[in-house]
Length: 282
Length: 287
Image 1 (cartoon, rainbow over the protein chains, first blue to last red):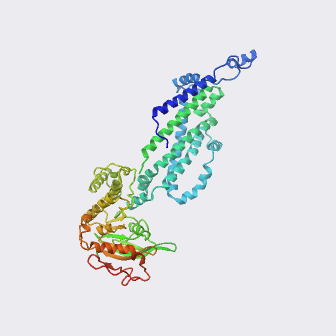
Image 2: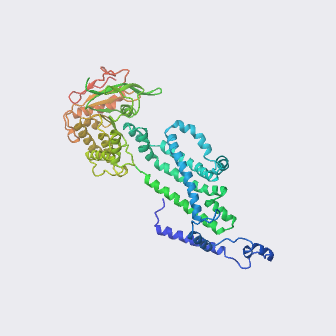
Image 3: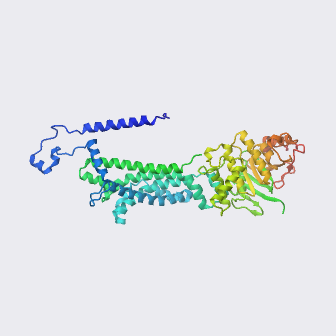
């Protein structure tokens, strides 16, 4: 096992890597004099600003992106019509969908996982369905969802639901099935009853495993929501990324990537805290 | 009715063609402490689980208080071999959970208060709010004992409760259980393969022959006076005769016992009782 390194040394190295990366990026995208082919003046007039950039959209450097980031974050929650809303509003839409889909999935997967974990019969009977459905890309469900639900907003929630349900279901079933026999025997000799045993013994015993499943699920859900919103459109950070691509706002796309990463990290840390709260050791 | 609380009648456990034990009969009186001693594989733990109601026998029945048992009961508290504490609950929480099962009407505060009392009785007043991971092996087993005794059961079932502990801890816990059980006239059944432990605690020691096809081969009556402690036990007259008798059984007679050609006077329903502490040991069973 590697020895423990002091926090400040790792942090200093992280900052160094970041600084080197940003500096290299900044240098690489600096406009070079005389680069690019000469452009016909009439065509330049049609293209407007793009002509001055040699007919291509230049990759923005970190400084340009930072300026844009400050601009976006100075008013993240504005709404000026359906196609012009702040980045905060878009992220909130995405979070709402993930929250709804993930929450519904938890409501279904945890009780069902409990039943599967407690009943070897149910486990064997449902296993083939789970094994076939689990590897299906959640986006493959999208057309079917759009066709049957006929509402794009609910369809994307359904897609989040379907992708978050499997890890929670399997982990809950596994956690419940592997509760130590001696604890169940204690509950039996105490005549604790099914309900009390489930709530006071099996649930806390399986909670760390269930939480692991929830963390995997929320990670997948956050991956999938971006793609789903690109398909469905309307609102959300995925839609916003695609919209900025259509606008050729490369800086906005880079900012969106950063935001998606940070929000994903926050979601994982949040469930990490819950996992810590229910963890036990012997 | 007699003073008999438990009557084990002709129980057997078979797995397919293999018979672990069969034709096992014995009784336990109210207030009596019975130890079952035998080698690994003779089905000792299975017999305890059957008495607890956690398993059913393949054949036969167990009658408790005049009724055949069909499952576990709060009247028969079990002290498990591994302490079997819930690691997510504190010591108090573990005992309070048991109490909340015993007394459905009790509030949480009532259960907690009674749990703390039970833990203080086994000398854990200083560790009430610790999780099992923060307790030593002996302390964990004390919590297990407190959990069982707090139920105020009609009978205590113990499955090698001290076997996982170091010698010093085991000794002090044995003395403590001897004290607690004598004080409350607790009916108890314990599995062990520690001969001294059996002599210290038991009024009668059931000796099981080796499996497969194990039987109760002898019943040893412990005539040594009570209270017994580890300090005075080995000075008691008759102690050595008793100990030698049980050890001899475990070393040679347990393997030599054959139910098809049993020693004279042996019958499954009437296993002869011996009192080695006041008699001279009987000669070894016929080869």
